[in-house]
Length: 442
Figure (cartoon, rainbow, N blue to C red):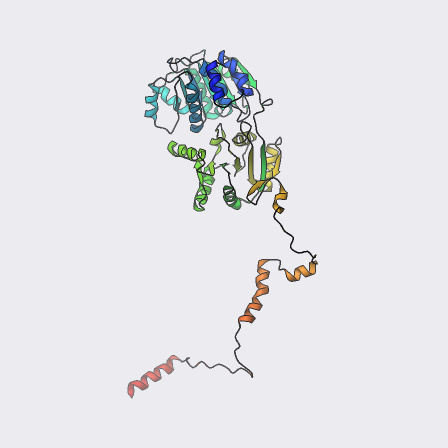
């Protein structure tokens, strides 16, 4: 690491590079194409930011292109480049869908050395001849396993084709969808695979918990979690419709929460992220879009309101907590069938039942009995207990009802046989007419 960057590295509170940062540093500086595989939260962004900035020339046009799967990740990566770009006066900008394109065009006129964005928006600006890639030396594909599938795969390949033929490629992810050999065949370059997933030691202690809860009780459970002190969590949903329904219920219950979904405009999404990062909201309701790369400092928990459909999705979701040595907890909600399927989905993970009692979320069942006091010193037989304590509330009400009626009842008579009551006010219509006619003729 260059001396200036090393000093800045220490100023930021880092003691030593992580495994992935050490593995890719020299190859990236030497211009080699690499595939970097490392666990979530192990410093992959900084792994490519530092070596690429060290070899970027100020004022030399756009030399680094970084592709990200979401607006939030693109903005976050841009902020990292801007922070570290102050060391050698380099500029970085983001190009994302949903943002004002004219403002992005104005920023491109300043010829930033680093451009970070989503593939679709970048291609649109290339087609309008606003983004020029003639000076690009390196293309980074972040969260490569997601971008190199479906429609985005074609967009990534087209962006690489617009770059110079000798461009350096770098692919980073926590999970692997394509081998280095396969990517080398697709893009026509030699790619070195650097996998540190088994040797990385940056992950903190993460408790993977199971909570048996019926579907119609999940919102109530979220409300209880939100009341815990110092608790904050990303809440993942499989469907936007479910997210919107839960968001409305939590708002009605005055639970501090925000939502982050693909159909929102960029300003709404940015506001939600800002409020959550500042701790103004206890829960951030989101979909799979927030499972990739988002770095929220000291996030205590991740909640799977809907359990993920794949092991890859589970890894990326849960990777939002327990980052860089910090502890975290995963709350997986579902019925017995759901939780049994989850164990089969990720058999390498050790799950523990979670308990919520006395203002704590724990895997220690003993805490439930912490404040319990004995009811009586003398043991009570089953027969005595059944006679003295009603089994249900309805039985208790039935037992009290006759007593209440007897206590409140007023005697209808005193002594002797009660006489039949005569209702003197009762009269027929015919009798009433006779009285009326009598008064009329008198």
